[in-house]
Length: 292
Image 1 (cartoon, rainbow, N blue to C red):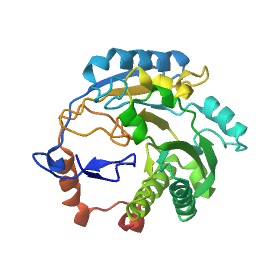
Image 2 (image 1 turned 60 degrees about the vertical axis):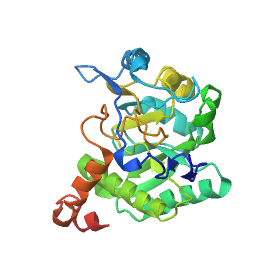
Image 3 (image 1 turned 180 degrees about the vertical axis):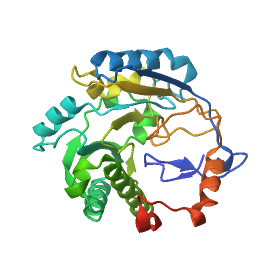
Image 4 (image 1 turned 120 degrees about the vertical axis):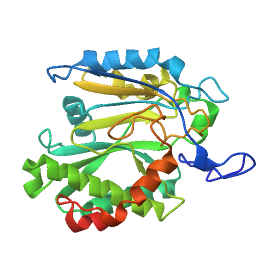
């Protein structure tokens, strides 16, 4: 099938023959585990990975056995792990809750990677109350990817962003500022079609590891998930079955706040529902920045 940007991680075929991307939908497998007392532990993460492996039958593979439609895990930010890892790259993180770490998909070309990082750093500087701290390359094992997944594999790095000033003690406004930051990055990236930038998550509370992977392949691809101090109090896992939808790295679940089995609505329906409300949207928290 013909497509635009077939070398990019967000590649999508164009409308052709009987295929029309407007009618895509999918059905998947989801799982959740949580500590009822809210205590982070290694056991919660390990059990989440076990759940994901047992959801393998709910996911699907492409033309190769090692190319998955998508798999991922959304969990609490492991403070001790992040503090240790960022210290190794020369970044001292502030107190828990006063920083956010996001997993970012970036272009593989040297120029695209540099431009993608520039977009994030310059955009962060434009949002009041945020301070960009630095980057950490996320270790991955690309050997577990099938040919199709590797062809469109992004560069994956983590960015660390700190709350500054009054936002240090106001978690709601910190999360609101991170939301504005993420949306402005998307708008800037959309204006440059050859520079896709996708933040899998950006929050002081949670982090998202996902990709065009099989269920057993998630932990192999992301060695972070196997580290002893990678702990969480909660985890959502997802095994994607893109029934008549093309798989891609960005479309893997979980999303930033949830994961679903694809039957609640279509992408087209969700987009239209939001566009119909844009004219009357308002927010005390975001104020005039909502229009940006």
